[in-house]
Length: 109
Image (tube, rainbow, N blue to C red; front, side, top):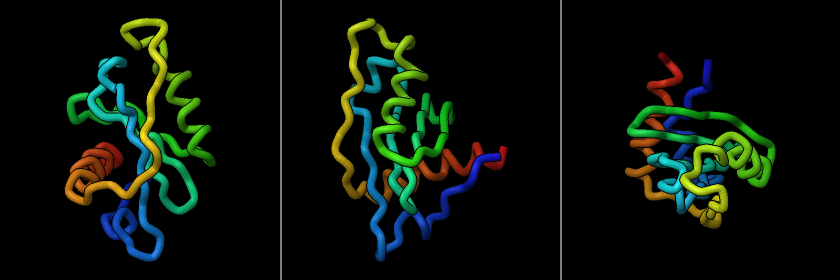
């Protein structure tokens, strides 16, 4: 069973949550791909049409990015596509709340 992300944890003020978003997720035929940096861990979340495809935790951001490539490179529309990530930044709260709701719904199911 996946661990849920609490709204309080996702928005707490002492250690702001940061995300890195896969800019070219459409090239992998995916809706949203992001890495949530929370509590010193990096959580790779992959969504397709509001369905959770992947929710895995890694010790480093680099590890999460490498894991994404290993898991999804064959799904890219072209073999030369390289994953392009944003820097880690504090996300828009309403956007993150919607994504957290999807992750948590899948964790319960």
